[in-house]
Length: 140
Length: 139
Image 1 (tube, rainbow over the protein chains, first blue to last red):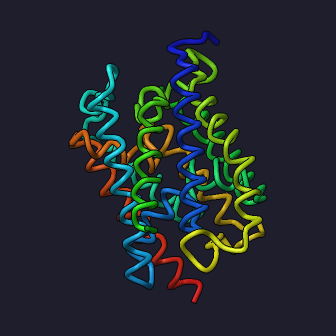
Image 2: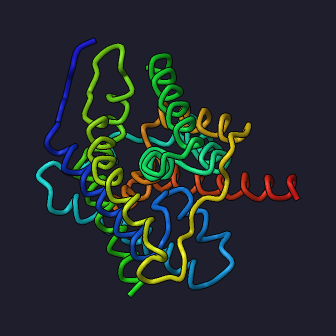
């Protein structure tokens, strides 16, 4: 194993911001900042008020990504890295089914759930990490 | 105010995803490539976030209610079941294949990249259909 492209300062600061955002969201709206759950709730929620709260979070997320790319000296070049092929569709279907079935993704289980010391989230986080490591090992 | 806080939370979250490198599928795959050329950065993203939330969540949840609502909306399921085993395994496979999980996929929509938009739409439909089917089967 060799260590490559390590960006400790940026990644740690970004992580702190994500933790701050999740804290503000829980403190003010009382909701868990799990992205898959927030997205799903836009379609499945029973009240318009809840749908709007969720939609605005997602809108903020897009705006945050946009502002980062606009102001950063090192913007994300998503055009170069994702071409439309069967692998992309397959991956998207797996992420969709998996996060819906497991009721959470990296944020909901990996950050919020672990902080609540939820048994389900601990198991989920270990499993998606392991599945990710194994997939990259065989797919690359 | 609740709506403004929600927008603000999403905005800070998105900035965090960008700054951390999590928005880059190549960086995510670099983190998952642990046996070869490993980029450990994303461990620090999760570490940084947990550093805050491990302290803040228990403190916030000690309050009787959040600032803008009458009660907290927390997950109700406590026990392990087959869904919370199979789901994350499926998710991890898709994550490893493309290097996108739901948060970065959404934050990346602003780039207008067709691949990301297609990923987002297919992912959302798959999520919705899975939930619909599950609710039909369980009720």
